[in-house]
Length: 191
Image (tube, rainbow, N blue to C red; front, side, top):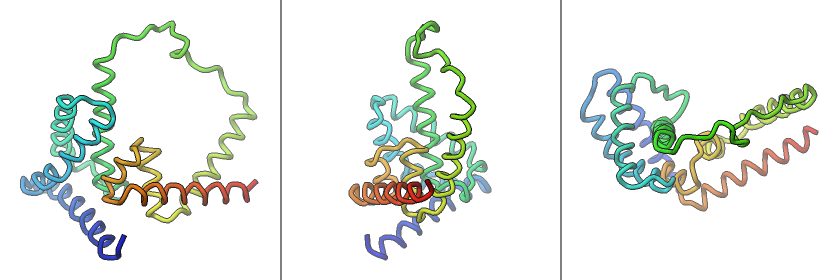
């Protein structure tokens, strides 16, 4: 990606965050229209790729964008990009919709039973590993960290991340792979 494309992406992210802020502060309809125009087709594509039918995807997109209008003041640009925040809302709405339409579950189903309590030594070991992983993740460059978060915290596919961050699919895969290699190397040195 050229330096110019990177600044365009940064400028676009700042513009989208500003639009949300104007919706929160002023209920600016133009800013909301810009958000809708930018995100609606991307959200629909994302939802369809996640297995939602077209009508359901359109319904979820409408719900998500209405939620953005109503709750714009809850957006914190220090916590996530506008795209991450909005796609997370879409992902949650998709899950909620899926829960509503699936058949009732059998409470005696073994897959729905709680797992046995973890042994204390395993719990401590897991917590120690988790602390190390969190510390090492925080050392990753932002371009790798943001993609890793989108993939594993937000559950987005590489294709959805590519679209969300406006990056070539190969770049997304490479950055995630580089992040894993760095983490693996740092964690093996830790032990």
